[in-house]
Length: 241
Image (cartoon, rainbow, N blue to C red; front, top):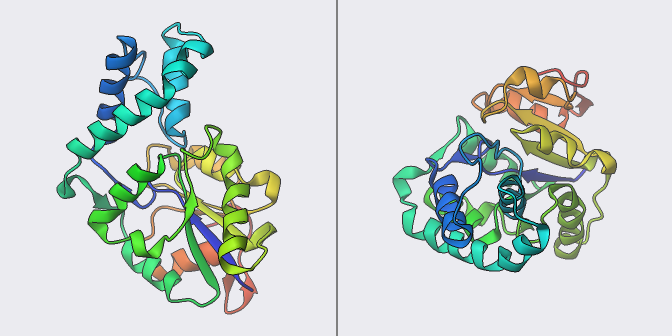
């Protein structure tokens, strides 16, 4: 059975040393005069446009005012991010390289991204780790503000690239946030939660992902969790590691 495996970036594949959040704060201050409650905000699983809207709504701005500045804010954010990011800021999460390489070598697997990052920033984060060739397409925050719209877009793009119509549990979303677990539920996808981000393992477990991993450091265990089978058999119960 072929599978479309969609990876989140921040907290799942890597961390980027807080460069994104600082660039976003600075871009918001430049455009609106405030970053709103940025210090208390939970960025996990949010798209970049959603972050702008959430923070500026909290600061008292109307949606019309936010919409009017959204394009300029994201462009400024990207420029600040590009200037601020250094290769040494980017660190792979445990086991990521081995798991991604194993999946890329599996003829049954199509790899792609499912991330709230706008596309240029997504690729900038992957570049220091040499991972961009492994993720030739994806669905991004620049495609839609609503994270929950992105899985269906990724499936559509996978069909265009591979000729395969992925559906149900043949689509796998791997991420570190509650939103990664939930965003594909209406499509019946396999959700694999990895407790390497800001969301505690116990909080992820409450959403009953199909597999819940502490990290990807055990390659065999991680692949079993992602692919959903051991020696061709269905894996253990929902929520098990």
